[in-house]
Length: 356
Image 1: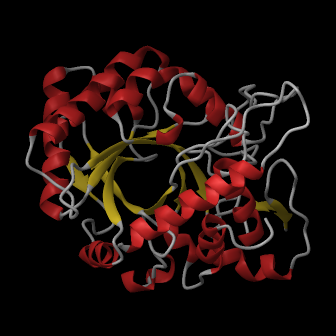
Image 2 (image 1 turned 180 degrees about the horizontal axis):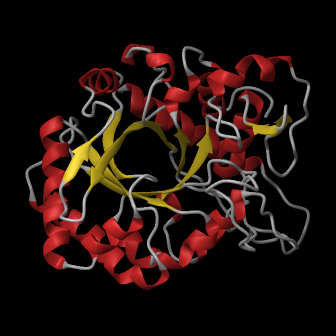
C-alpha cells in the first residue's frame, strides 16, 4: 500500500470511529455523520524565506496545488512563481502526492474570466491552453480559481467547467498514477454564493475548495462578509464561522464528499505563521469556542491547537448540514517556513492523535 493509500485508509477508519462515538440525547438531533476518506490539499504559491522544495513537509497531504497560471482575455496563460517548479513536482510525486496547477487567483480581474466564459470559442481555447500546459509540465490536474463569478454568470461558469471537463476526458493526459486528471474549483466567501450553480457544478468537478481559511472571517479584508448562514440545528448564525457557509454550499447541491474546507497557515492580519510562531508559543490565549482561533497581539491566529480543532469540526462533527465534508485545504504551505508545527498538528488531527 502506498503512502497516500495508507493515509487515506487511516483517516477513513479514524473518522468512522469518531462518527460512531457522537451520540445525542435529543429526539430531534441531527443524524450521525458518515465521513469518508479525507483529502488534504496544500496550496503552494511562495515558499517563505525562499527555502528549497525539499524543506516542505508533505506528510499530511494527498494533493498539492501550485499557484498560479494567470489568464488574459484571449484565453492565453502566463505562469508565475517559477511554475512549473520541477523540484516541487519531484518531491511531491516521490511522496506519492498528486500535484495540480491553479489558474487565476485574486490578482486576476473578474472581467477576464467573464470575457472568456461568455464565448464558447474562448472557453475551448482557454481549456486547451491550460490543459496543454498542465500535461506538458507533468501535473495531475487543474484548479480553476475564478474570483468570483457574478450572480448572472452561473450558466457561463458551468459552461467553462464543462469545457475543461470535456478536454480532460477526451485527451490522453493522465496523472502519474495513470488515472484521469482531476478538475476542481475554488469557491468564494459566503456573500457571493449566487454566482455558482452548485448542483450542476457537482456533476463535473472532482472537488470544490471553499475559501473559508479563517473561521473568524476577519472584519477587514477580502474574506469579510455579512451573509446570515448557519448549520442545521443552530438557533443563531455562526458567522464568524465558515461552517455556516459550508452548510449552505451543501444545501445548494454540492456533493459533501467533494467539498473541501480551506484552513489558514496565516493570521487574520495576513501574516504567515513563520512570522508569529514565537509569539504564539509564548501566549496563553484561549481557543475561542466558535472561531476556533486565538486572539494574540491584535490578530486571530491559528496555531497547532486551533488547527486540530478546525479539522475535527469539519471532518468529524455533524456541523456542516448535519454531516461532514470531503477534506481540508490550507493556504499556503510556504507560510510555515522551516517549522513543522502546523503540518505536524494537521497530521495528528487526521490520525486522531491527541486530545482534540
